[in-house]
Length: 518
Image (cartoon, rainbow, N blue to C red; front, side, top):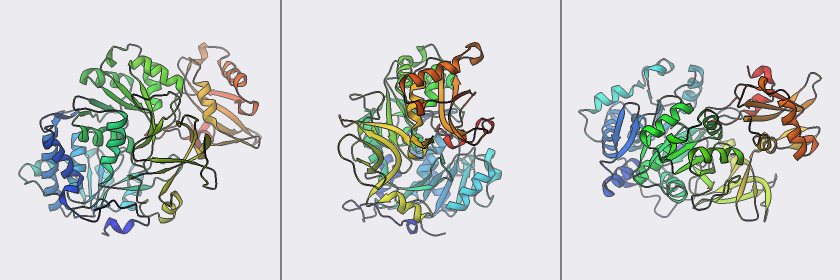
């Protein structure tokens, strides 16, 4: 098994002293030390389907599980696949692997056997931690269950933290695959404090009394920050559930655990607003966060009204590890993604990579301390996105005169209509202002003659059959506000839009036509 250090074709800037490998640089040791120093040891850390774990219980369990994993042959630099539903043991296993100086590979436990096999072939783990539900997807020789680890850990001593430096790899997180095959982004032990400084401290002002709930799961970059990084750096608690949280469950968990910080994606907010009318469960919420794709201002307004708390839109990526640009509690402008967060520089570039001055629209390039060191086994793709210390994000943004940014979707979301390139996001945002539109996706779809026409796929808040002429009304709304070539030629009402597990729209599926959505 090769050491993960061999993977990196592009090096990040090394902070002073980064070459000195010490135990206290290990993220598992750092977080345990923080909990002791700030007297969070006995405070709640996780509220999951089985009960409550304190910060101290979590760190103690992780240190003993690390000893068990070491006994199973896990060494520094080895990769350990983590395929578990969200619960406290997930976090404990992550910290246990980190304590050994090994590399965590968190993946979706609900993938198919074939999808799991593809990821295993790419990262070649020496161990796989998975539940019984997915156990038959993996080689029994490297498989271990969390219950088995917990039993073995009862009599184990705490493992000492492996010395690491700031560039030692900590985890590999796979992209969500909105445009193709997922890629493994490699991140380091030094990245976590930067994530927390930007979001946990600056954006959200988290304190030990807070209780967070993230609809996005831990194996995603968004969920990892929301449910692991920020709670463990702030001494606060997080709610975890192995279930798929629909609106009713979200409302119940928020009410039951007095959640103060809610993290979700726009489609989840759309479902919440459509299906929950009573604001009573959300009385404890002080702030909510949206990420994953642009949050339309009308949806943000409806979610804010239901929750009784501001919904802050942010932009980040798996390659950045967390958010780089966001609205804040004291600086929130709906319809934008706010301003750069501490530690990150943003550029707007043209198609040739040339920076544009002043208010401008183009591709977002980001520089900061947490950029991936590379994609696993993909040096050419790494070289394409990392250029002179900058990350080409593939996001289309507009820098506004006041220094804020507006997210215009992905560059590959552009549609060609009648020989003219246009952004469907603009049309979607307008359609979302209609009170009966719950979700919408717009794409250029070939008709029977092979000509490409713009089509709007709409998830309606009511049965569209009960509203005669609604499709014409929606087309008329766009025609009254936008140029003719941006007007959809048809509207199709669908029960749901094709999305990734993170909630991002799979526009390439829409382009194939309605028959592929059934």
